[in-house]
Image (cartoon, rainbow over all chains, first blue to last red; front, side, top):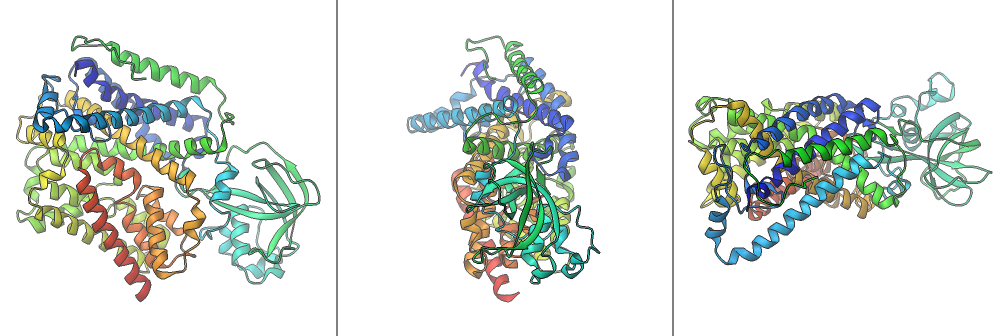
Length: 285
Length: 337
């Protein structure tokens, strides 16, 4: 193991930290950090990314001067062969005492470890490059269908707090209600008659359903995109159903669901379905 | 980006770091100059996989950085003997106090791995470090506050999560301490490093030592983080979540479903309570609590991170003990509450 090879893990670690931290800062500056995480954690994320940049640069400087720690346990999946170099002599042949301890039986396992370490390095480089080269985007309708729209009730929706009977009388301002709020409200209420005829204007993306209907869908994010929960409202329209994944603004009124077998008792009878560009804040929280 | 020179070079080398910097600058340049958002024309499966993996990395990186910084503080800056003096001498109370140290560190599970490594490099035994590792992601101020925000101070979920985290951490610590040779649970290289570091004279230039430490720890943690994020994203893309969620009402199966969900989604413990809340109306409280106990300890991202330090046999031990414990707590709660 030459000195340059033993530094590869440090380069990989510091380079990926630097790249991800800089990209995080760029996302924050350009206002797209909420494509990945809930804004609740934005400040924390930005502060630590700002800490990571100088720390990674300092790490690179130290490695460049030959003072770096080049421990062999560094390459992710179980690189337990090399020992570790202290500040004075970073590469003084400690790789050999690891191999010597185990003897011949270690050779095969060593190969496996090198391969696993290589795979880990490839994933690291691949995801880092993808993060910086590909434009950030939202999750697709495929994921929404797979996570079954509306499988979970969202207890933190504003709709769940208000008394349903008040909604019909326009005493409660519902103009700020999003897809999540309406979906929670419709699922929870038993007295749907108070809601029939209520006018709504909502934006979301299209998950196609049976003929002449689709689900107007938004993802709700509690922490980051991995936990995204799709929520949706059924839409019945006389016009053509837009393409899957297309963002639309639906204007219409709540009506009883013509499909009696469905769990949701209310749908939107659309007066108009207008296609729009994806909004800058595609997720609800 | 790791295109370091292949031929042997002098110890003092600018080429490697220069190439790394160049690669990062080029990549950031591409990011700044190319369209800010939009579709890249990839198939939906691949695009969603990347979005999910990147979101795990973006979410976890600050915690990993915080954990590494704290581990550098513990290892390089806190004077020898200060931590050790305040701890009880006898093993059991000592571990109990160590498990409560987590209350002082707002670090979730991914930041805890570097911190636990720092503790062992300082001379803590594996049993003590493991106790800290399991306890801290549950008994930390941010986690308690966010769980309280999600579920309120009343009800059983918050107290059972806190007490359960404390008990399971000390249980795991006790089992590791009873092991014939606890050091056998560590990877040989890390164990050798501990032996070399503990008792060795402190580095004179602490800033340089800190920067070197940051390089070493990121080298260990970052590939593991990316592998964990990739695994979590791949499972999310491949396994329909609806199959798990559809069994919410069965008291036994729902515990298993929520634990499986926790282990595959790999959320940070600081934020998992809000995610669990969205299942609160479909799942029984015991299942939610099992989710909240197992999630911070064992998940696919965490397994990748733990593999940097521990042998597979320890991971099996940890998984068996914690899964049995969380399942028991969940089932008892589902029956009694």
